[in-house]
Image (cartoon, rainbow, N blue to C red; front, side):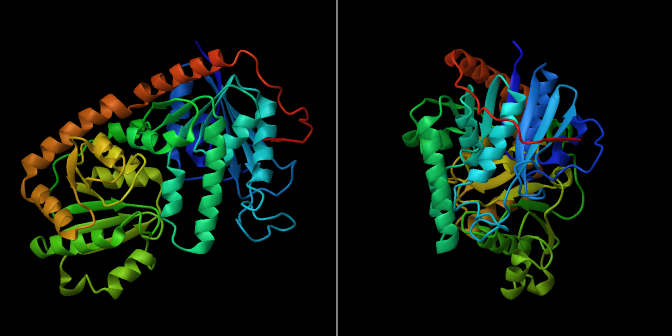
Length: 424
């Protein structure tokens, strides 16, 4: 059975440009940072479904008539404007958290009313899911993080208040969602107290581009990759950098390649590394790449010897899963949320609060290449079985069918679709 599926979530225009006809004008940027949605959309189209994606962007005028739609074969991308600032005024409009994303939610609902899909699949449990629920259409809400855990990791008042208000949005969404999935058993356990509906576990899909790459035999210095977005306690970067410094004492030619927000040249990670003088003595080399395109990140992983993933908590762990898809062994946290479930037999699990344990695990992989290859091979098999796009899409198709069957009478959509939408 084929459906017209509405994917509601953060979608970057660049990630789905290959699915669109050549645009007559420049597309809005959309919301980068979630390439898994483009992976899912591509697979759903391949399986014969029609798909409309609904997202937000910060580079459109803050008007009700500023929305944009772009089209391709069996696919539409609807982009509505979003405010850039959370607390301060955005021109004549309030900060987006002050009215709980009211302007953004209305824009998404107008776009959904225009497209009228059979079923909505909302990603994350915040403004996108709330907008989806308000349409009255059959829906599936996928949890990608634990709102309460995220809020508890925020230490300062401003960001903490923002995260707790978002947690309140998630509470409302999960109390009212008819069908809910979570990307790991750990996350399902975390959000279950907030839900009235049951929770199905459906992992994130890994892109075919990851499986298409395989780690080959490498010669030269040991190459370690670490990727994270944000220099914060949850990402646990300082112990990881201490661990690499310890590793470099035994492997002085070792390289650490850092990717993600705050990990570029002159950014937080490099400043901290230099201030703590961990690079003294010319032991080891650290490269601060920062934010790069997803494909560049995959290429770096494929040419590495191991992935170091020091996060204290993950609701899934896409980077370890991508590394496993390529046969790259992983060093990660033994008690880091969903990470042990994701990594399984594809790496070494240690106490990531102890730099010595991370250094010892990396040293073991560096000193025993046969063992590292075996770990990587086991991880790749595991990733193919659990995280391939076809396996994940099949699970979601069952959820869509159940959602449509569960809702025999659709609530009326918002009556007015008078706001103009620019076709590109």
